[in-house]
Length: 146
Image (cartoon, rainbow, N blue to C red; front, top):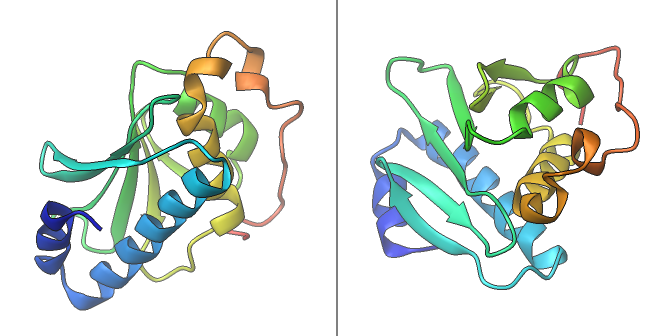
């Protein structure tokens, strides 16, 4: 983990640091499994930011103003969150066209978020495809399934 991100994470309450640490590991794992090359880790707008050459950056953060939630942010000028809403609208909660909202008290939906991270990190190849190349919506009847 990048030194600046470690410092940022040290500012969070323990339970938040644990969740963001899990999300950080998931982001790094997805990029590694896809063999996308090094992940550039930095702070953007005071938030942990992750980017690879082939994709759109991802940021993660927790806000004191929303203490029971944490966020994974995507570039609002992409089709990412709109696509996630179509594919995972029954499983995820969104903030406009910029973020997935996660609950501190719920397990991280690893399978769903891995797919969202994959779509973001491969966005440059997918941006012209309908639903970013996702063949059909993945439907669930219960929210927050893994």
